[in-house]
Length: 272
Ligand SMILES: [Zn+2]
Image (cartoon, rainbow, N blue to C red; front, side, top):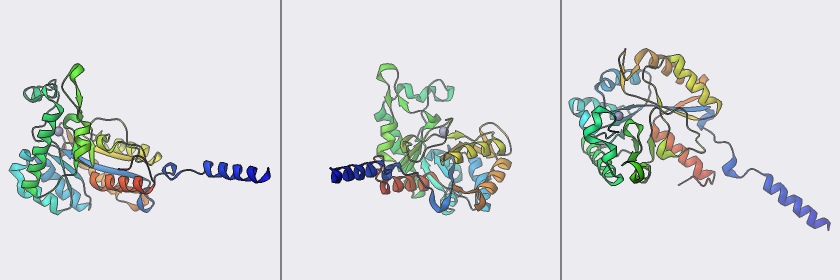
């Protein structure tokens, strides 16, 4: 029965070959890690302190905006688009848990997924109207992904998955595994108040796994609450933009698009 043995061995050989989906995920151009810098709420300091800084470092970031917050600085936000930054959706009215005093009058516990969707769609229309940009990514206000309470709670992740290439959380504790992660709920690590050493430690941890680290911050400045610090950003951008360090620093849209294409090329069941 020698021929059968050979074919059985042949079959074993085929079975033991890694399927395309199991091949290690590769970042482009030999990069070892991906990182995105993202900033929420269309805070004024993002325009006044961020745009020049990022232009000097030839860096593109993602601004998740609430359209009404852009009103005092429309020229600045148009400049952000011209500079090549990504404008993502952060909802129209920024609903969060009513446990935040600022959100008690507009709280997620009183929402349904349908109402949440309408709020998100209003922001998409506002961004389109004000900047002519079709937002393809989203950041969950306060990183919260539910509507309602108790047994009636609904997840708002499907709302985002149906509308956007990617969605981002907040105050999460991990980078994203590009071969595995759910693009609709990317983990976002808080960059506010962080030292360069702290950001670098996060990046090195992500690099050890070939992961995609997504930072999420608010103000950009020298000090203060909810502020990603300019000296930290200066150092981080110098590091991330040094080709020797193997870092791909880009927007959520660009990296998520790459992840999706790689999954499709590898025949991954997660490709869509
Ligand atoms: Zn926010």
